[in-house]
Image (cartoon, rainbow, N blue to C red; front, top):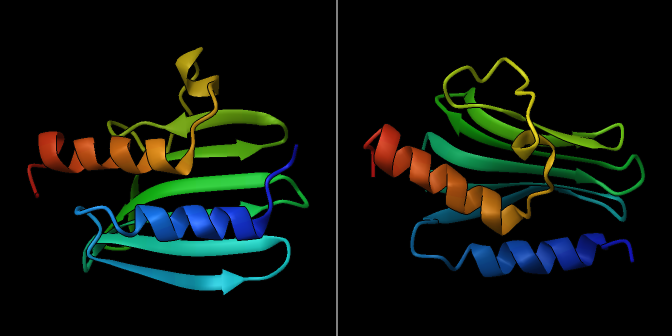
Length: 119
């Protein structure tokens, strides 16, 4: 069964209650699209974009307006942009595995706390 924008919205509301999220914002929400930000700090956030018509999902960890880690679902396939080289597409079995928004937020927080030592 295909998830709806309302289900994704409710999921984002739940995730926004995590202690690590200081603010959440819905940038765009229609019947088929949602774009949101879950802030760890003012200039450090996870950006979520989902278009259920395409279907397309894009999750990115943004620091100072630049993606530093990401995972996307486009053209029927998952791939990710590793922290070590976020402009590249990683090619591996792990890169092709689906990820939930919650899992991505948790992975992003690990990068922020362990690799960047920001939080």
